[in-house]
Length: 273
Image (cartoon, rainbow, N blue to C red; front, side, top):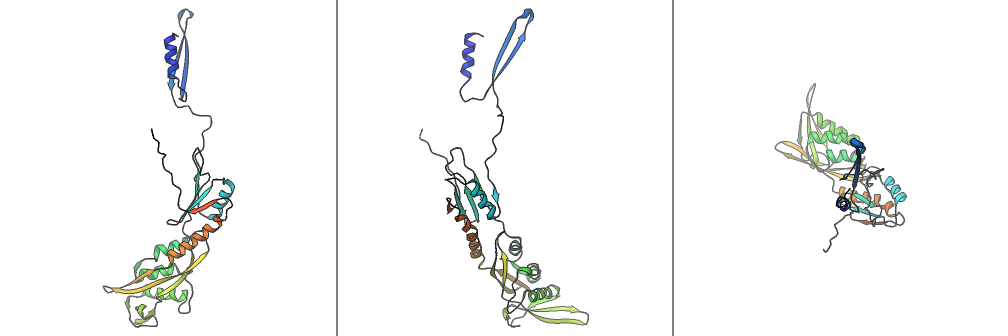
């Protein structure tokens, strides 16, 4: 190989480059050998690929806490985002080669999710309201005015009636009084149905948490000859925050771990060139 060729070859081999050298030998007539050396830049696969950074998502607090206890460092921080009830942990916030995060993202309990999907914050025709109350009756608390069974029977009467009108002044709960007209074999029967203007439910809000009690308000109105029920739960946002604080409490007790409100964030370093 000529001197200038070797010099050009060496110049192409730079420190830090991923280079591959292909060497081939060919025997010509007369026994003369020709050696060809070719430098190419190709991706060289390592013997073992590095695994991706861990970014586990836990749904219940005990597993999240156990994982932190097992993998925490002197620089582990936990940040709680109140706005979306997520909790994040950075295992080593001062890691020079990238850091790993894990998250606690508690989903809603199935019973609370059904209540929220069918009733809370909704304005419903009275027959739809009746059906949804029947679906949620296992979480309705008995009261002195009306038991869950009584309310379910009232809902059944509303559902099967051929005509339902608002009856102002009917029963103790006059504002929510209804008159249901039902067709029976002997003719037509009219019966007043007393609906409470509120009822209590007891249900876990997040998966793996204890049940909590809160009130559900019901307002009956008539619009264009049709009876509507407006459902609201003024306490629900406060209850969500209280349960979130209960989830966070044992996490705050982890020894040697900084726990605060917020969420992890990164930004690019700025350099003066």
